Image (cartoon, rainbow, N blue to C red; front, side, top):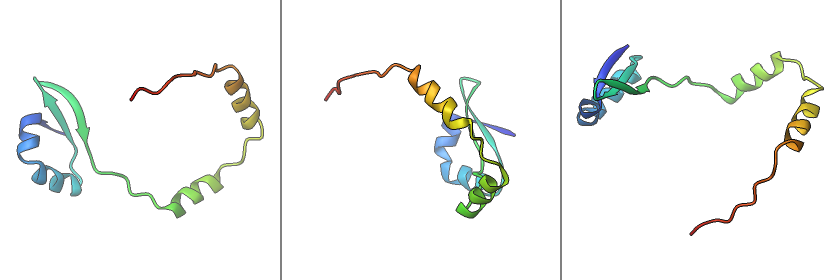
Length: 82
């Protein structure tokens, strides 16, 4: 994994994206410390997601657990600020 400063990343963003598109991963640094990672995305199709979901059995207790979690979480009534 290569490191690149935020300044260099900004100056050469198009070239950076070209390198990422070809499989490279970069850690973007600011002040010598890593602040972000830029890496290729994983291409996933709807068919792949459906196939993944079909490989796993439905957990009948999941809806009960979700209901219990929701009942224990207080509703927050907040006003919107304009």
